[in-house]
Image 1 (cartoon, rainbow, N blue to C red):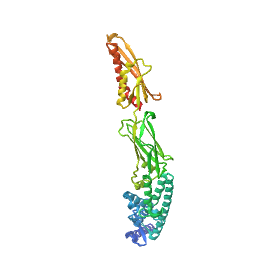
Image 2 (cartoon, one colour):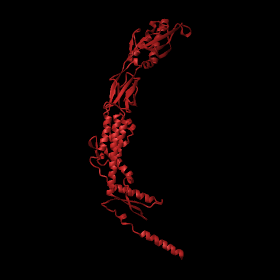
Image 3 (cartoon, rainbow, N blue to C red):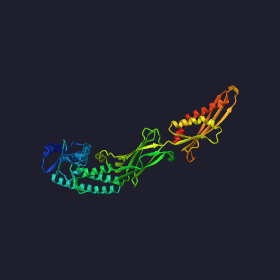
Image 4 (spheres, rainbow, N blue to C red):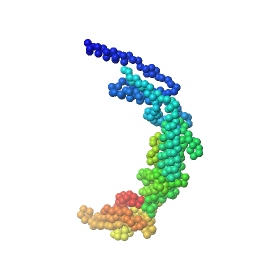
Amino acid sequence: MLALILLGTGCTGRRGIEQTPPPAWVGERPVSSLHYIGIGSATPNPIPGEALRTAKERAAADLVGEIALRVESTSLLESEERNGQIREDFTNTISSRAEERIAGFQVVDVWEGPQGTYVYYRLDKARYAAERQARRQEAIDLALLEHGAGKQDLANGNLQGALDHWGAGVLGLEEFWNEVNRATIDGEEVSVEPHLLRSMREAVRNIDLNAAMDVVTLSAQGDFRFPLGLHATLDGGNVRGLPLLYRYHNGTYMKKATEFTDDEGTVVALISDVDPARPDRNFTCTIDVDRLTRAAGLSSVLVELLGDLVVDGVTLPVEVEMPSVQILPASNSQLDLEAHAGPIAALRSLLLDAGYIVVDAGTDSDFSLAVDLRAERRTPSGDLGNFHTAYVQGGLVLRNASGNIVHQAVLDRVKGVQLDPATALTLALSNAAEALREKHGNDLIRALR
């Protein structure tokens, strides 16, 4: 009997809870002229406290949505050309920081029923406005300090530091990009974020890049290498830590590199190994804007706000002064001058076709090419019957004007077979000339560069 009484009592209690009606605010959203309202709900969850946590998050988000930030027509969000993406990022930021933005809200009521959990928040409008205005003024004051620090860095030639400070000033006002945040800067009342962004753009766009000369000439005297000085200035002062991107075509591919200016605002670009017959003869240099924004620590949203930074660069021609070469028999060559005529003529034609200057022996030149030829003759015997065989072998030695060897090549033995021994040697020399062009021509051309 006792068990039945207890069971009946328990059932009666549960029926009472289930029959308790929810408060009015669950079914009908409250309206207030003095408060922002936030209502959140969540369906039942077997995990203890999970439904309440979800309902609180939704109430906070609803409260933020109730605040409905108005975008002023001349604010940063409205004035920037790329404001579509920036607005989306701004909205996401507001949503992700909901509870931080609405500090000081009140928990009016919490109700849990069989259909779910409900939370009721409200926030005093006057208090919220006063606290937000205080945060806004603090952000403006900090932005002004960042502006001054950026100007000082720029005056000292530290563009990276200036961009970092000005960018921090813009981001510090991110919560208030929907409003027009005005302050006095350098005696003029301006909108703070646009002014900082404009300072960033102008600092980059007003940099002057200059090369040490108007034309670069590569020649044998300089070993076909040239260290070109590049100088970056702003308002007459050196700019250090500036990434300069330079490029030139070497005949095979476009060679490029990025280097940062030193304390004197300079970079030395070494131009070398350039083929005279290349598709693009110009050297170009500009600011590597991507590397600059990364080095300054600018976030992607700041890069988006800055937009395309078009900077005047440096363009100048690179000329290759073809070297002069004299071709002569080696002093220890076994064969006479007449025997060298064919191989020397083949080498002369090869060099002239490639654009090199071939001068007479004994003339001052950038390079000298010595041809060493040796011959071996064999009288007829065996299967050859009456035929004579001549073999020619030797080598090439290329020296620069200082007498240093820059290239050597060994000529493999070639032969000529004829009834007449002199004709056999002539044929072997002709074959040697052909071998010089076919087997050693490209290596010789590369060595002369």
